[in-house]
Image (cartoon, rainbow, N blue to C red; front, side, top):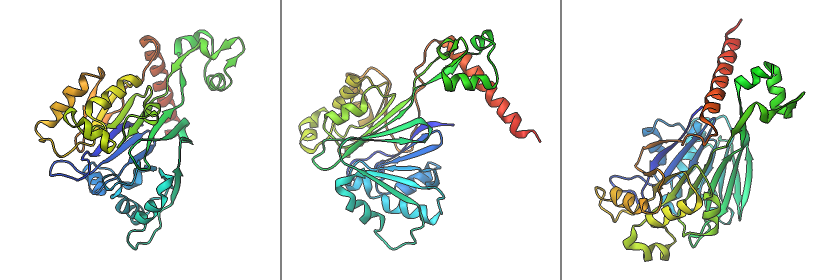
Length: 330
């Protein structure tokens, strides 16, 4: 199991010598989410060591070219590679015709199993593994939506407390499922295990949808097209500055921040430091200034007491070893 964000491209509007068009791959355990595949996304995936068969969901915020021109290549490659599973595609419902035009931009043998879930307004989709994907409108002057992924909260079992209560083997699963076993309650032998969360916001002014999606997430990816000197232009064209993006993250209680979608107007050797300096004045948590092919591990889970966590991790490790031994047994 792995959770990480792979930055495939970071340029706004046009690719440059140093930055490819937007594209972002979120690996979340067994699921792979590809966000906003701009032009060249398929090639960037090869550089990153990713295969289209790893994509289970494809999420497009809007249909400006730097966020969607990679769709034809990605979707056709899925057919070429005979991706065996269904891939669900999310995008603003108002522009469904653009998705279909891009999907069939050129003739090909469309063997891939592609499902679509266009949305208007706020929508939530239950996914496998106790996950929920939420979409909400953003403010870009055209149909645009952001995304949020939430993992359901759970519990970590505590070995010492289970042993003291004489609970072991299948009874642990029964207790977890039923919440009580005799006089022992689940909360007596476990600690909360908060679910993790992720949000993706591109091409937007600050708006209620952006605030809703970003609220309290562990990792936020957000556009920061401009610096302070272009604040007026940012508002005019429906974008954020680095400072505005960081202020949004701070107000929303975000744990870790990724800034991307950079304007080509800023010198490549100066831009990262300037973006970081302005964002750091507003947001005190970890800040990543995205670079092409950067890999960002998902933040560690917000936990309860450290001692309880270590106990729970030891229990999980023992369970994994037992399962592996059982699988190897003749």
